[in-house]
Image (cartoon, rainbow, N blue to C red; front, side, top):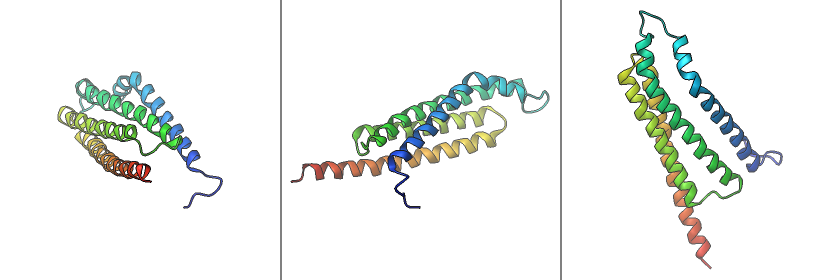
Amino acid sequence: MAEGSWWTARKSATLSIVVAWMGLVIGIVLIPMLIPVLKMIRVEGTIFDDEFILRAAGPLYACLAFGIAAVVILLRLLGDIRREEVFTQANVRRLRLISYCGFAIMVSSVLGAILAVPRPFFIILGLIAGFLGLLMRVVKNVIDAARLLKEDADYTI
């Protein structure tokens, strides 16, 4: 769908910022609620026992921390995009950091799959995070190539 006169790139960036802020708030709210939620699903005699909470909490907190870091970096990136500063070295660096966060979530999920018994949850989370980290690397490479072309064009008379 082509952007009409009522929906601009600035409005799109603003919407993305609002959604990212919502994600950040949800992530921060989850920090103190993670252990109580895990305790609520605890069922003695099943895989969701006290040992599960001890094994799963660390990797889940690591995933949450890297996810929050990625959203904070994304907010800075979206701010630049909203100001129409897209093809900059800072944004290339931010995209690289977001991809590292995705790969860190993947590694934390693999650790969670090793430690906690419901492995499919951690495996799926790790696959999604790894794919998004790889996707961010591709976007970073495209933005970096466009940045170089823009710099060449800026210095050409």
